[in-house]
Length: 171
Image (tube, rainbow, N blue to C red; front, top):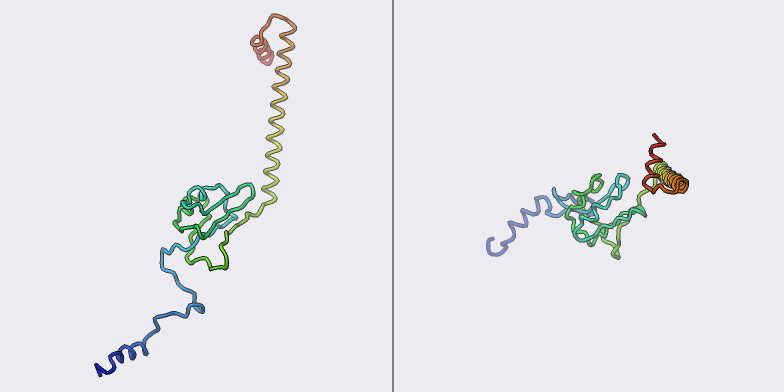
């Protein structure tokens, strides 16, 4: 039996053993530990600082703070994990598995939702800062007008003496 059917032993072994392949579509593949996979973001936690964009060697990540968008070109990404390491909020992660293939090359863009309360706080802070700057400017102009008035009244004082006079009056 050795020369006529040399594969008979292997056929019988394979017939009664577990299959070497898996039924892939029905059973999802289990990736081994430390598989890099692809980058995912939890946009709610992201502060759009751009550290991930600056640390990405191929430049696959783009952050636009003004537009509240975070974009990754998955075909340019080399899954090195530098962006995950550099993220100060730890909102990036490398997930096992890979991006599903598609008919064309796409960029994955994620838009951060705008919180109305936070937006109102920012607007109020901007308004307060503007009012404070205008008040400081008006105070400086009023101080300058007082100094000019005193200088012209005496006729001999210099601008430095006028400033000292204003400071002495304030005390």
